[in-house]
Length: 316
Ligand code: TA6
Image (tube, rainbow, N blue to C red):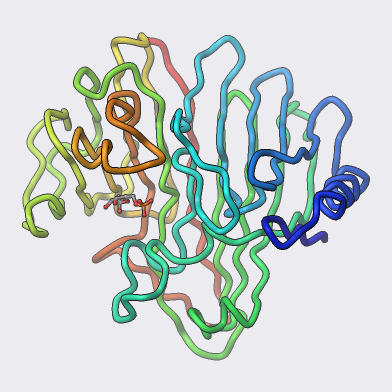
């Protein structure tokens, strides 16, 4: 195991050493290598016969995934800011151990702290089916214990191939039950949010955050003509994004999740975000596999919860 501290507190010489050591321990020639990216972040670059991917050790954040001969599936903001301690706008931020604002402490970080901190590399593997796996763990420190006093272990496993699989594993290593809310807050790359539709959530109840948390039921596919921020309380069903502009369908299957967040900030909120900009909202859509709102999960001592997503493309 190797812990990679990044960011402002590290000289460029130290960062070079960290990257070198990561490559000595975990690089797989022609498949996975570690690099220094902007802002002193360390990024694992994966490439195999089936796809390429980039994963930042900060936040264990998948920043990109592009299956062979396809356009990118995961969106990264053209105005993304790479800096220590702040999640990059785009990719797959890991929201844990709470989704949204903390229930009682308004000064605790939004969407939890896992997305802002450095994770350590546990393992890399090249599998016989020519997919490539990176496993990461979030270390517990005095800082994390201040926000989250529960004895626990958090692991993220990413498998890169023609399909992208991400598993977020929460283990209760203590003696008391605890409850988490969480999300794989995935930003998908689309042709134009006004032209896509989300299928699979028909007839599902949802909480409409744009309308003060009103509870409604989805009628037909989800389409977009304004700001959208909803928590669907679904059956863990398969969800699809139909994108006629790119002539493709993004397919999403899940395990350990009975809620889905669908988010697009639309014009004003997009323009107000320094790391997004005025028109960026058109090319992205978040469809997040979550355990949010009524779907919070309680984990007993010795137990674990696995939130798993699998993404793949189909032609339209
Ligand atoms: O998942 C949707 C959401 O909770 C929205 O309410 C929106 O604010 C978004 O996440 C992004 O949050 P962030 O803290 O990354 O700016």
